[in-house]
Image (tube, rainbow, N blue to C red):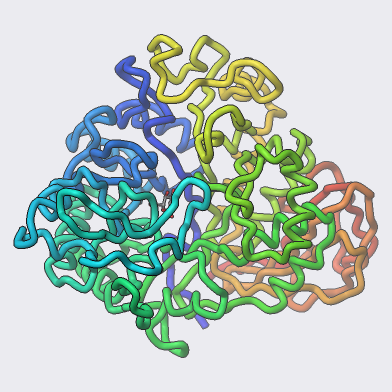
Length: 554
Ligand code: BGC
């Protein structure tokens, strides 16, 4: 089967929060001109797609996930002109831009909601979900336990209860209303015209759920996703939908295709919430078993659908799909103190400190992520090994400004430190005086340089994005995961040692190994592999990507 070229299957996606990346005007908040000034850095890093966390006007009570105007840019971040300039300059460097589409809810400050609450015959009343009576289930279905008390709140002005899946300042839009659908289609068309290559669909399952007070929700309404796909594709042939759907593995396929035996005709990319906690469990136990289980019984996405893999994102690391015992092991290894944990299910830390700042383990973790079927998504600052600030509340701990250098505000901003959107950690093991871009740019052995190489090697290994994954069944030490990826472009054998002890593994001759195999990515010097693939050495926490075959012509 010849796989069509799809850009998103060979991309490296970099998630950036513009407000925390680079401030260009000294107001203490990052902005789009600042981000533009860092595009050369991102280009050298080797990322090919930026996913921007929300950039719209917003009271910013949930880091911009509470939008008050879908047709503009938050004034602190810049203007629509700056946005177009960003997409133009990014495109010149071969980088696409995808933005967050946060349409499960608006901010309660959105003029639509302000009008809707004004009176029962407001034209916007039915854009939201109301109940005249107090819903008996109003304390159910909470997403942020401890921070959120209910999902229905009484609005004094409206004299009615409104539904909010998330915080009370985020009223849910009523997706059963065709006017809402038409308006959000316009929003999407607007941003496509301004140069985006697609959308990260925030909270997708909640957009599709049909909520009414005290009524069991019916089936999810996938026609919403169907129409988004048709409309975006019609307007821009290669635009993508990247869905956030943290749901049971048995139902993820529906977010990608309308028919279980059909091609992807809904979203193109789906965040891999199935694999993510498994990778962390494997790293915590130093045991390949959880990965073998996940890769051996994969949730197969319909043709054209792709996983977006990640280790950390802008939210807590969600371990709710693990058993209590598994979750305990991950907490024990990576978030032993209560203040490192969140909502009883997650971890509010960045990767480097979770792995004790151990360079070998950091490399191993990212090599492992990048070797997984799918498209890797990386959060800003991961490439230099930034840490978290646990004194900040909730998820803010992992949302501190990018650390560019060791000056007062880490090169993020010229403002007074107390004016910064969030404090820059200066001291300590992960503070900007130790961990910053400039120092790592000067050092050929830095983590940043290693990360750049990783991104570039992945670009030379298209079989990982487009290929078929097989776990190698040969008996191996428990800590070692061996899998291969095969595509028309070639075949790669991937070995990862999750444990501290070195190992020597016999893989044995592999089908399709046509020429002399050679190492593509390694953690240190090894003897070149032979065609027998026996006696392959692996250092503790070591990894080897071995090319078995490369097609001369496709
Ligand atoms: C985003 C969160 C946000 C929530 C509400 C999530 O899925 O990732 O950061 O708080 O949606 O919009």
